Image 1: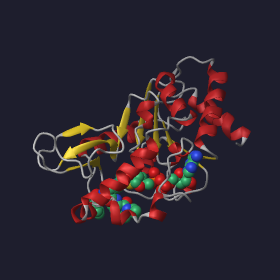
Image 2: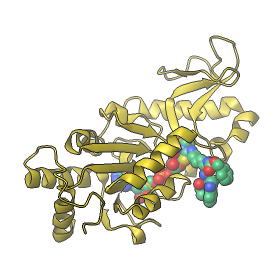
Image 3: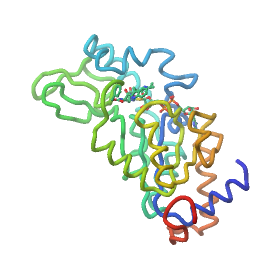
Image 4: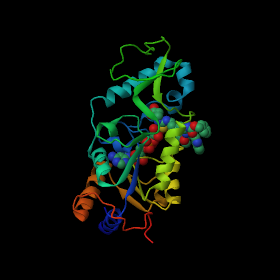
Length: 265
Ligand code: BV8
């Protein structure tokens, strides 16, 4: 990490209150959860369009459930990594901190993050296709595939947003409001191609926020980011956090030195 760049970012962060982190599959990679497009990306084995869509589920619900239960089996034994832990700790570091995630693995909540928006749902929840009731199902492997609603016997579906499906409008509105109102937006471990999530950094930049990207490699967002930290999130975030604690002596910050918006006057 470029030391001067880190120092100037830490100096800036020492004076801000409202910070948001947008995360993707990359923040869970060091926990052992496969990413979508990385070399162990799920898409290589299974074409997303063939499984993560309402059409695929209508065509063959058992196949789609087998795929999700396979992913649940991968996620169940793993835990959050230092990247998740830093973001959980930043809820106490910054006056107003939130995590917006594209991940359905539930690891941010497991790390202790409370102020969390799950844009694309959660793999540990299922929804009744007739009544719409949502329930948590933690057992994996699933006792029956496809699982049926214990109340009405109808098919259950993963409580996940599939391609071609709209996100929960309330969750989406809050994600855009948080992004547009923050002073700093961290964009961590995402390929920044899936919409509408990939439009959140632009909303933050329009609101005057600094956009800080952490990724193993450049993405379509990199040319537009104020800072790009190349490396694994589970190493870059603890380093940034340590520098911030050294600068601020550990306590909660946000003495309002900056003009309340990302770019100091
Ligand atoms: C919608 C749940 C209304 C499922 C997911 C505009 C233009 C073009 C297309 C569209 C558009 N608007 C809508 C679309 C269609 C589509 C879309 O965006 N398609 C893409 C492919 C172009 N969007 C939708 O369908 C959305 N719905 O818009 O509805 C509508 C509908 C149709 C048309 C118009 C409007 C719904 C999108 C949500 C779909 N559901 N997930 C499931 O999980 O099974 S998306 C899924 O893919 C993930 O949730 C995530 O969002 C995305 C994967 O992206 P990443 O998380 O970034 O993961 P990826 O593997 O790609 O990248 C990992 C990155 O991490 C890499 O950069 C890698 O370098 C880095 N990395 C790896 N290790 C580390 C690391 N970084 C740091 N540290 C490490 N250790």
